[in-house]
Amino acid sequence: MSADKDTSYVLITPARNEEAHIEKTIHSVAEQTVLPQRWVIVSDGSTDRTDEIIQTYALNHNFIRYIASNNATGRSFGSKVRAFNLGCTLLKDIPYDFIGNLDADVSFDPHYYKNILEKFQNNSRLGIAGGWVCEQQNGIFSPRYGSTVASVPGSIMLFRKKCFLSINGYVPLPMGGEDSVAEIMARMHGWENQSFPELKVYHHRKTGTGNASIYLARYRQGVVEYNMGTHPFFLISKVIRRVNEKPYIVGNLLRLAGFAISYIKRENRQVPENVVHFVRQEQMKRLRYYLKSIRVDRKAKSRLQGQTIDHD
Image (cartoon, rainbow, N blue to C red; front, side):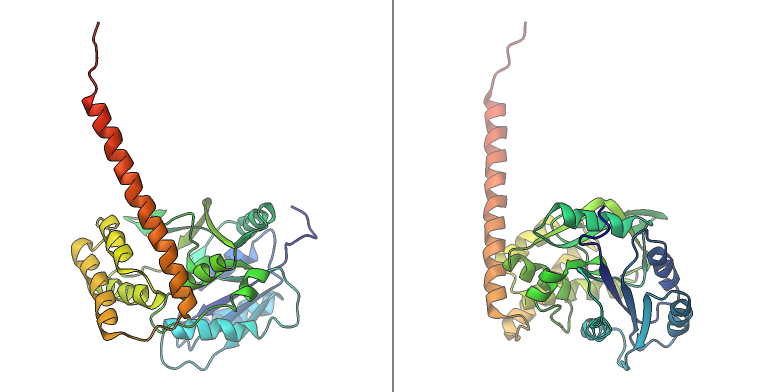
């Protein structure tokens, strides 16, 4: 990879009470074969040893910057975006080509960012890129359910700077979904989003392990779908396709409930109306393609069943 072309990147990590995992993330970044120009780690109101850990490593690595927010309200999606934006204030004095959000509970190999930068160099329209998130299941790291090459996990999003500026960064949403909105707006501006399965990222925090948190997460996902402007028909098809995702029927019903309640109450969406229009155009196009593929498959199977096979 060229040493002087589109290789400079910066990272921002909002971190709240991440003492259990943040050192894994710090070691992963510090061991990169292509280091970031700067890495701003924002302690978002941490009450454990997170601040102490960040400050210790910042003393030994000149590319790490520590900053603390005054968040006293706890972990939330809106506060994460505010912490990210606070981190951006420490980037104004340096040039860079790419800017990334990196969660404080992941790890990856030393060539990870070198490989991601090469993906950008190979595709000038690539606006957002990332690896393939794996989570522990029965003691083994496996790809996260629902992963797709057309979408980048929010925990490891790396933006081309031109793309990031064209969408004006993240939109703070109270119930989350800022990552999805960023991808939608990137597509609106002609950029591509892509995850690369060969570039593994290991997620160490166990999310949604308790029943209550799983159910709450599914309900929240329905609210997020509404806030992003998801078409009702598309959501129904999505729920059908994800029938095997835990906690199965109850989880999918809660997702629908979150959407339906927000829809009935006509909650105000935080995303612009042109984004909603674009989302629905995309979704209905995908839904028509999906239904067409089902019809084609059925016709093909019908023709095969109607054929007679001669035996010698």
